Image 1 (cartoon, rainbow, N blue to C red):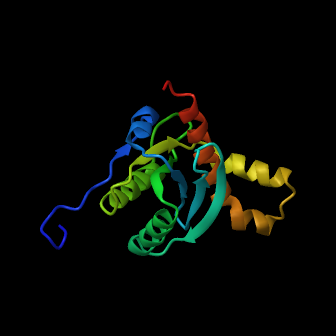
Image 2 (image 1 turned 90 degrees about the vertical axis):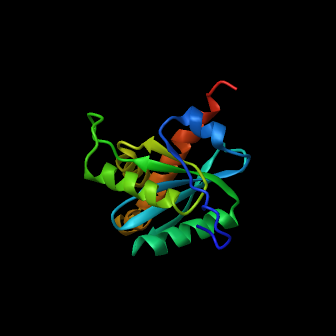
Image 3 (image 1 turned 180 degrees about the vertical axis):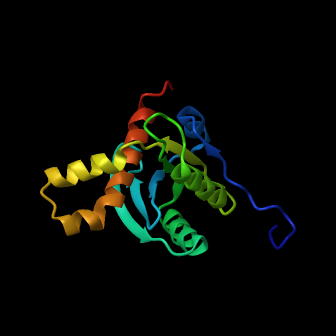
Length: 166
């Protein structure tokens, strides 16, 4: 409830990219790779064509992490979030996927912005490959792996959104 007795707007979490696209106004999106120790973030351009690495938030408590995420969202006029859902290779969901769904539910309670759960199987493996190909040192890879994974997650969703019928 807000100070005037109204219920705060709640966001919605969807797995269907078409439904997500319909919920969006014009503007940027944030991609999130939610790990146990960090939140890797990526930012789309305004036309939603290109994803770029943004930052890595060291996870502490959910409220502090969410505050930083929503602060960034506000500063960039974000229209929604693309949250990587770490499904198992066989499509089943384990503890990490359950934790990601809980993160989405908790974030929905704080913002009206929609969240897309995007299948991120092997995004961290692919990010590692990209960084090794770029000859990044082991320390450098450790520093940027999460935001590179978030970039791959967001870029995958952006590419799929562009192919949706208009």
